[in-house]
Image (tube, rainbow, N blue to C red; front, side, top):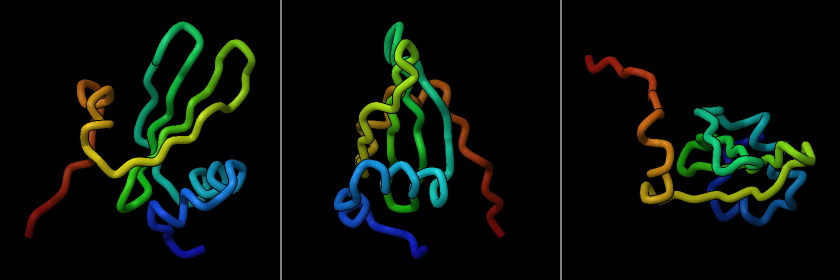
Length: 87
């Protein structure tokens, strides 16, 4: 499957979005939102995707895509990006 842009990703149904995330995106980290919610952050090339998970019901919740750095703020304290060599 070719890489999708954020608009194409948003047109997918939720099941297709989750499959795309697992197959095509890079997992970056998980954060705790509250006592029952965990949020996984994925990098999808030109955008990011959050997958919300309810730890009490063991159900996948909301999928949110974004391409603004403002929404990365909850992750910045613990996010470690791979180092890049400059030649």
